[in-house]
Length: 211
Image (cartoon, rainbow, N blue to C red; front, side, top):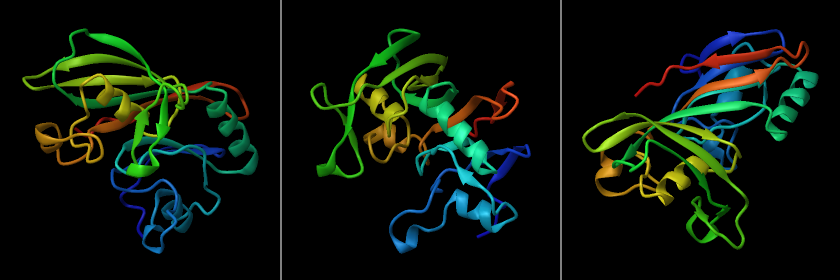
């Protein structure tokens, strides 16, 4: 598959900063028809050394760091595991939150009876925390900034649903007018801060929001 749909935002000998489009897997899926993905496209189009460090959901677009050698992969992966990175997302949510900002602290777990959904579970769920902030208020929705402290699957989507403001166009968690209000999931990884895997320099990268 061509690389044209993946924008290279920055190149370093140790890593790439890329913009993953919506409706593209980060890594290959298990089924044969799910082999097309971001990392495979990179490896097949000039970056055979590319190694995945972290992931975005299939429907989520935005910024990812890709390692280019084993040592950089190990060091970058450790930054994510130790929560030394900073990630900021932009999204559109349905309705009008009463406050302009807030903190969501709700444990999450996978819901095997409703694959691939996740749910809030205070008994069996893993700790999950998200900060949110309203950037713009519109008639029936808001543009918000989301800052996850933890990195659980579907965390931002489930957390916003849990406080009554599902993300627009979310085919897993939204319904009715919230689902119909946007042709795609309105969730984009807009900013990423990492430390250079060798120099240790703190680096910040931005990826413009497409909606």
